[in-house]
Amino acid sequence: MHKKQTGFSALVIVAIIFVVGLIGTAGWFVLGRDSKKESSESKTTTTEAPKQEQKPEQTTNNVGTTQPTETPQATIPEANKASQGFLTINEWGVKIPLTAETANSYYVYENGGAYLRVDIPGDTQKTCSNQAALSKVTDYSESYDNWRQKPSELEKVGVKIGDAYYFIEGSQSACTEDEALQSKATAIRRAWLNQNKFITLK
Image (tube, rainbow, N blue to C red; front, side, top):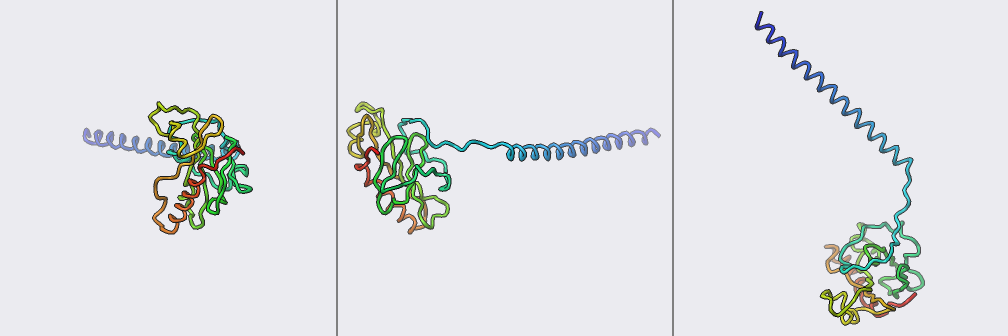
């Protein structure tokens, strides 16, 4: 009889653990389902204001080295698109003349720089649309180590308008392995760089 009691108590312990596990699993599923329901309800009832791409002016030493986040063409404000032969950077009050390669351009203002974009037919992933960035430098001196802050270097690549230097810097890497697409992207980058000395006030 002693053996039966030991076996019976072990069986009871296993059954209790099994029941507690079932209850815990059921509770976990119910809690997970409720939290998903709440998050989907909050998404449908809460509307966020659209992201503002126009930010206060920022001057950094490495403008053009960080890539902006992808912005679909449909969300680009009309004011950020090319018109009448120029791409006007509204945040800085300057404009860049356009060429055949850059005629359908637009820009995204982010990280203190204006990222110049042209959507290329066939580039469905938009990996080659960002080929250049316009930088504005207001903190400059010959004593700085960074060439992007030395007036003698800035005058070689860009223009001085008022108290600031403006210059276009091209992407340094290939955007695709597709040779035809890369060739178009390179032509666009060259077209932007050729406009460095033609940046003017709007």
